Image 1 (spheres, rainbow, N blue to C red):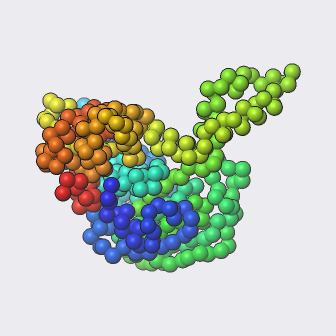
Image 2: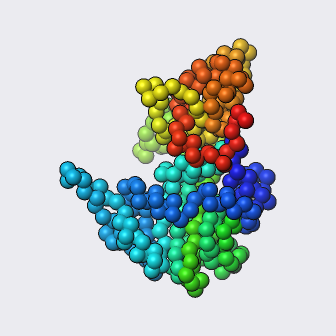
Image 3: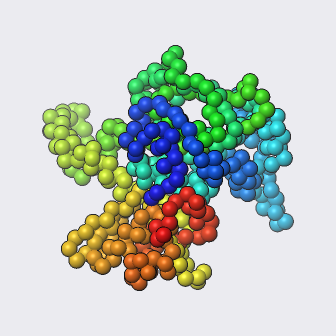
Length: 398
């Protein structure tokens, strides 16, 4: 999937692929002002909040360094039949933002198609799970105090400016569940300065950082933080623990009275480690991740005319003589080799208009698309989903 945001991030950070992700702090700037406004604007973020029933912690507001009580900016919208739905009170929210505040929308990719597609593209690029949070700060509002994240982040400044400070780690590669709470910030400042519209920054896991508009004066800042959670050695061991249940020796009780069978267990554990490598774990994680949400296709709504692959990671296509296998999201589909050109197109991550695609790869593309949609590896390209690709993802046919 060729996504303009990923190309811009790579150029800004001097990367060529995702290999440098998580290694070093680095920052740069994108040179396309239209791209940042296409990703998200302050008004679009507030429009999302206005049209949805959001709850804490999905949508939060902070002022003067403290979280604002939801009762101040939430209200119950009551229907004529008396049904009550919690909604953001936009007047109250506007007053808070006018005074100076920060609003945060966690997992904006769940609510906005452009953010959804950007996260999917980053997942195909990095082969790791990605979510995006959006942060809108106004006037002299402060941000979070000095803290560290248990995942790598790529930050894109979409509007305005914000003051940042990034420090070194005080514990190497700390984790959410760890042997040390890691509560003491490092004194080593790696970088401090303003992030302006179009700037990009990569902060690896464990680096202390904080951002604020205090002292900057009137204005705004909107940035999005793509959180990228990479697999670790601990993740591999947890995966092995699940596999050990296949072997009877691990299912027996530990006998404290007559000995635990430690030597036999250790030998079985060593064999298990040798049988399933970290590479096996990475491949399994990638191709066993559950299917994402999407709008179901119902022919009563109209014919299938355009689709797009929506799996979290690129499906694996395996050629085998007269057949071809598709492996993705815990499924393995087998089709005739004749379907290979259509499969490569439909599973490319780019939107595919079936009528135009038929002229490129053959009339069977429609039948193959119907199979992939039925198996939920592809989704019908609704106008709303299509808007998340428009101007950002190269069309596969053209």
